Image (tube, rainbow, N blue to C red):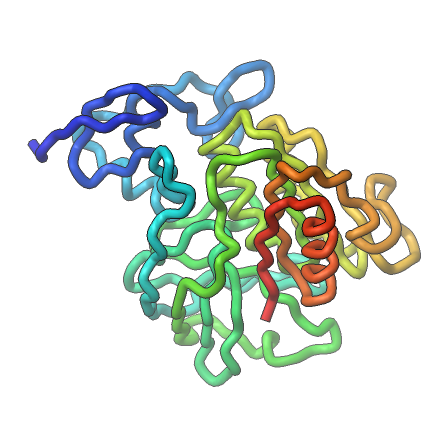
Length: 306
């Protein structure tokens, strides 16, 4: 049996194994649920309801949690120490067209990535220029611990992304940026433009597990309504209690009734000074949201696609 120690989580003393994070300890002791579903029930990873049970003592909880969830912050410590930059190598194992302008690429790595939700990495597919991307989850929330899932914008007329092939070598170097999810604080306002939804989906999913009671508002936009590829992800968020979700598209033409017309910044909720804003997308959208957040004194964490 591994060494045990006492740890105070939210003012309550618990006994944990050395090496466990505060989040893992809280989950193991039943202090927080993995996710909060509607009507006070708990949802599984795929959305069906079941009671929360404590994992077996000898089961490795960290293996299941660390790929998608950051460690909970220690009381009184707003920022955890930065994660050291690391390099991961692997190969492309899945390529799927999510919409005319978005491709999902899955890389299987030799070692699991250590990035937190919202972190970016410098990603190089052999033979192509490096891209700054946010590892995320598939739109249904699935991901293995040694996988890196990317949502990548493509030119509908064709371009370098269309040359990607299975078994193509890939290299990740990161983390890059400071846009990662930080538990705690006020309302979480998440803003995603185009493939920027990759980072926002990772943050939103983690937040629903770590802080199921935290208020969340989500605004998602694309140039064309056909590129709003994330409806399965949004359905999961609604099932876990996120009521304020807005979809919009810049271009005119036929749109589903739930998709608003116009720029993303025109459909944000009224920001408050206590909000924590994460915005991911193109430079112009990110910059505009930063200005709006600064105007009310809200904290804003930008994630610029590169």
